[in-house]
Amino acid sequence: MAKGYWVSVYPAISDPERLTAYDKLARPAVQAGGGRLLSLLPSRGGRVVAHEAGITQRVVLIEFDSFEQAVAAYESEAYQKALAALPDGYERDFRIIDSID
Image (cartoon, rainbow, N blue to C red; front, top):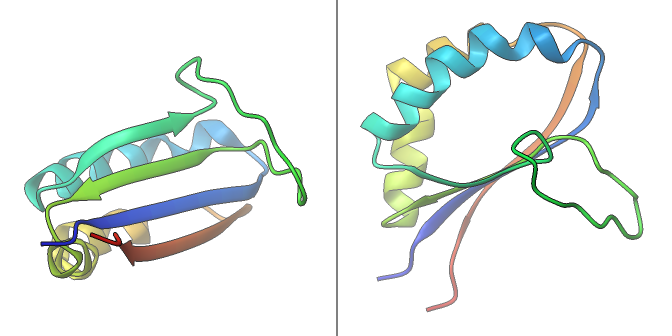
């Protein structure tokens, strides 16, 4: 079965500290939905080499056992509460994708 992934890129974050409320709600919601954090860059000391658009802000990659599980986790009540906590002043490109296999 093909896995599902959340891919988030934040081209603009005016106040990174204000993402704390979202993070506190999103992490347990993602875990409850079966998600596994694969990458949170650059805040965890990881490296980013940006090309084309040159976005080096926050990049998040989360893996789920299936595409359907990824969609269900996004639509869950717990994650919707986390989304409501996202502050003004951020820009986010969020996608749910499935793997090739």
